[in-house]
Length: 124
Image 1 (cartoon, rainbow, N blue to C red):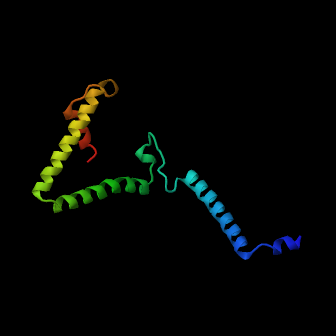
Image 2: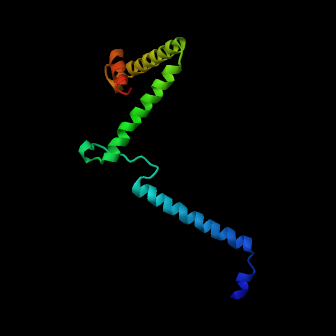
Image 3: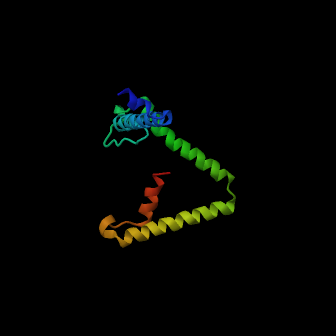
C-alpha cells in the first residue's frame, strides 16, 4: 500500500489538492449566495417599507441619489449643443417606444405619448 503513494509525483498531489480546494470553495460560495443572496439581488415582492431595516432603506435611497449626482455632473459638463442632441435622442426614443406600444396595443392597451413621457419621468 505504501508503494502506491510513493509513485505519485509532488506536482500531481499538489494539483489534486488544489482541485479539491477549488471544488470545496465553489460549493461553499454557491451555498452562501443561494442562502444569503450575496452578489445576487433578492426578489422582494410586496414588501412594506416598515419591514425594511434602516440599512436597506439607506441603500434604496442612495442609488437614486448617486444616479442623480452623476447625471447632474455629466449634464454640467455638456455644451448646449450636446444637451440639445441628448434631448432630441430622448424624444426619438420615446416616440419609438410609443410606436411599438401602439402597434401592439393588444398587449399594452391604449396609451398616449404623454402617458409614456409621464411614466418615464417617474424613473428620473
